[in-house]
Length: 600
Image (cartoon, rainbow, N blue to C red):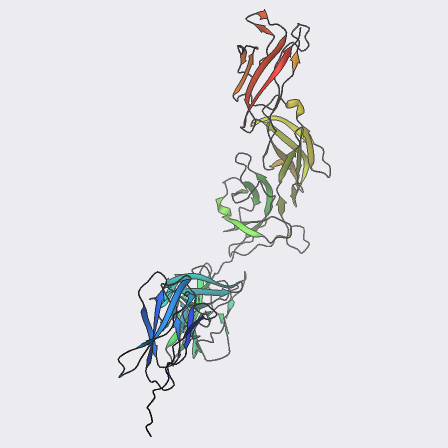
């Protein structure tokens, strides 16, 4: 009996595409075309905007594949996929269904395979340059490398270099006061960062060198560099007259300190750095340079912060005067500031005592960073000896460091339209006291009056200004504290001023609805009753009769007003129309129309 020869059943290829967790990889899967067909599946992709072009992206004999999205698809893009099956000996091919998904390049280099950058070295040179290098990253599509710095405050990026560069160098001269480490991470062309980056490589950190007034030795202490696994460490020394030279060699050991004692010369600067090397790999690293100067200075014996005051000429800075010892050799004066009593002190200036005006024992500072319109400030000064160390001043022999602080005056104010309310903090000082306060009031920028303030626990004053309503309403105030130094036979009286504040009253004009020009000296003139109107500003006052004829005009707000006559003749009783235009104390333009009744 005849048996027919049937072919294997052939199925339609149904393609299914899903995104991965990052929406950056297309996960493709499909059913085989038949149970025994041996051939190749070719995967094609078409991106939105590239129609009708289909790009061959891969081929496989399996029934699944992945498509990692890279540049230029940096943002969400609709991707369409289809699969073609072909086999040798077949004259035709079979196509799958088309499926689509939205994908973008959000995976940084190395994320998909957990590969990390391999660091090579981190080291300083004798000029303070930090050199970081790493092995080229074996991943395509590298746009740049990000350099990270880790110190006690955290890990943060400090710079970026091109992707074809595998080193980074920058100058840290004067900036190595704490242990730091570095690492490198990559970023692709779509700006997607890679993994956390390479392992952290720390520098050899030498603890700051401590030199006392009479010390004859120093101790160097430094951190280990586990990433280098050094065979030995070297201590190098540099001074003002010689080149670097090897003064000692420490073999592989747990010892991370070195006591060094020699004949240090006064006024010389000595610097040290540590160099470690792994002889099996040839790698080496070098620390930052630490220096100190050998001085034997005389200790200063005078420091007194005399006064701190807002500069009344500029109202945007604080002037500080300090009484100093001008005989101490090579001393410096540091000025520190804080806003609140519990804040840490922050240094804002350092001056050489030698820069004082000859013949005077006062050193002047100007703090141009103070926001005098927002805060009062505490100031204190510290005098340094020739080694740069804080001098110990103990004039009262109590065994404690003398404190010398002041606090400036911060003036604030409000108004209710009739009274200006002023309030401020007290001026304080550890070396003087306030004898009285004076409130200085200005009108249109000129001093109008000086108001003595009773010395009470309260530092506030209510200034009624309704009797000054004929003015422009532009008031400004500042407070003066009269200071008397303590523990002085003939104290010099000083003044500390607050910030100057401006308070502008609102301009108002009231118009009567009738007047009686009968020469009885009561209500004989019709004029605006003005409150706080600028005398120098634009002003127009017009009156019309019932037929619209202008019968009176004035451009001077100080004029007595309309007396009820026109060309010397009395106007009849009745209703008249007025128009007024004026500018307020803050520059606003106002216009008003109305009627007034003339009564005889």
